[in-house]
Amino acid sequence: MRRLALAALLALALAPSAAQAQAPKPQLMFVQTSEDMRADATTLRLVNLAPQTVFFADRPVRMAGHIGMPAFLEEWTNKAGPDNFAADPPNATLSVYEPGAGTNTLVVVKISHPVVEGRDIVYRYRLIEGKMPTQGGAAALFIDWIGVGGGVGPGFHGVGAGARGVGIR
Image 1 (cartoon, rainbow, N blue to C red):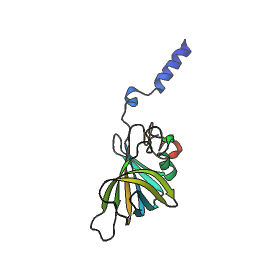
Image 2 (image 1 turned 60 degrees about the vertical axis):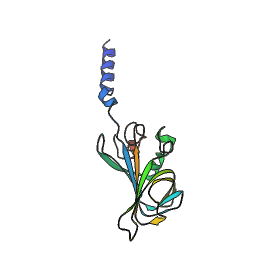
Image 3 (image 1 turned 90 degrees about the horizontal axis):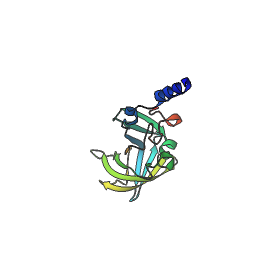
Image 4 (image 1 turned 30 degrees about the horizontal axis):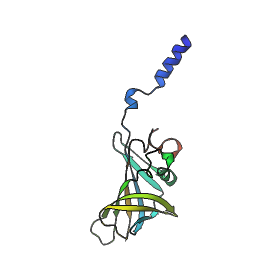
């Protein structure tokens, strides 16, 4: 009897509380930066891409970090869970510095099918808003969040858990 009571107390202590189980999950956004960009009607190439992809969230907790390309590409596979980027391609805003332009060019796209070619990454894209430049200078791609079921932290694709990155543990 005493053993059963001890086991029940231990199970209760280790079980997540109702508040923990219902806590909102972080909604991560990703940022990829490159030295240059090129595009045609269907593909976007980020040239000399930085080796790390930055992620951040401000709700329900502030968090930030970075992940390597293998971990980022895993977010596009079934290993990342049912709500992976391949199943639900993200929208992204591309900010491009074009020499001689007064401001950065901003373009909103839906990205899919990432392929790494040397130090470049190539996405297929569908234009949502703006006019895609065919070439530019330094670029930043701001990739929309992965919400419940995907992203960094427990229950979020696993990025940042264990050996994959620096997110919630």
